[in-house]
Length: 593
Image (cartoon, rainbow, N blue to C red; front, side, top):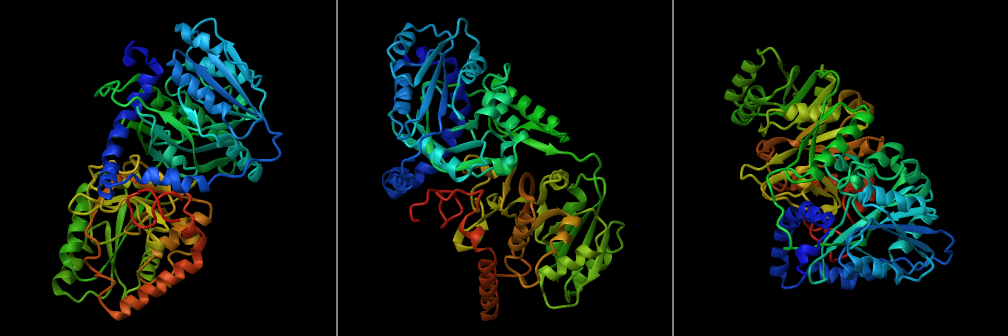
């Protein structure tokens, strides 16, 4: 029998979800593997991963139930799935296998051979699909926590032990998820997904959590398991509903690969311009989630299947003040102002231009001209350049409820850039919101700030071509980041003032990083907004920090201040895996710890 004939419909739908992403990521990563003449992930698996595992828990009182809905999987894959549970280093588990009326006689024959008393097999009388089958399993679970496992995937031998150890260390956790990788046709582990810690705005973009999910039993039963009618997107719907009743402190991420997701690469060609019903159901699940949370928003399809773009809409659009420091360089400022005036679809905004000792006659003439426009005010700031001080003075003068810090060497690309930034900035749990910035050559200049890169902080995916999907499509989706660049940063004025604004001790460098971390420590999410796009002609006005000894000395002082103040955040960015490189901005695997 051909492999294509025995693939379950669920497996085919999974391939439809994963194949485009796998192909794009594989193209991005394997070039680096070939150049290095070895596979970095194989090296990581062989030499780094073994050092990450916890010792086997001595006190094995906690019972973990594992639910596996089954429908016509290839028998050898099902056997390997069950064997991966039998091989767990933690022994106090219950495996609930729910046969959803499989028509393949070999499946039932195999299930009848299982004799381990920890295994319970349930047979459905009629095929009810994955949600019903999963719920049948949940109903008979006896464990303190319930894990969900697909019928042809594998658990790492240490998976349940890591879960129990994590719960013991974090007793408030009620929902846990882990990193995962994929198993190719040859049985090799490939394409690791090293995930962010809890990231609600990334979850609004796609189900980045997927596997390995473990829920507290009471929580899962209160949620009534998977919703019938969301088959194919039932795990995404469940995750969204769980996020509604839990605080961020109750959601845990284990930064280890506990789950191996099987792929049958090349067995099914299901690339189509038409959206599959599973994608439509994912959109429906997300739309209903936002409605239940009373978040006014529109959900659009994203650039890849099973990715979404949410446009948040406050009940009333506030007045916005766009703050632009400038000095000389008329053409640079003129390009910026013209692009705002011509391309900004927003009902109510003003531009506050801060003239920091302009002496060029053409630039002075231009400043005089734009100062006469209705929604532009030019103020003189006749002091030595201090980016933080200039912006603080401007924000104090601003009339808007939301302020946008904007470099003069930027140019608007997307007409709805301000709508998207402000829509996010007006969410009650959001602090700083940053745009996607591109270099003129269409490569990415900024897609959020990652702490620890280069020893301090750097931009995600810098120099990655805009046409590339980067690491699991992250340059192209909204997500929580530790920080965003001050070159284009939106925030409510009230929040800006509450944290004390930009720290003037950071005269030029890292003031935005310090500011974002202050906002984050005050309980807000900083969010990268992929849909708001501008060009950034970086440092045209100020120049390179390495030009003089004074600039180098000042830069070193500001780096030292950042390290002294935010060392913990620099050492661990919760939105960037500890297993990804600190030496580059391309999300490649970390091989030196």
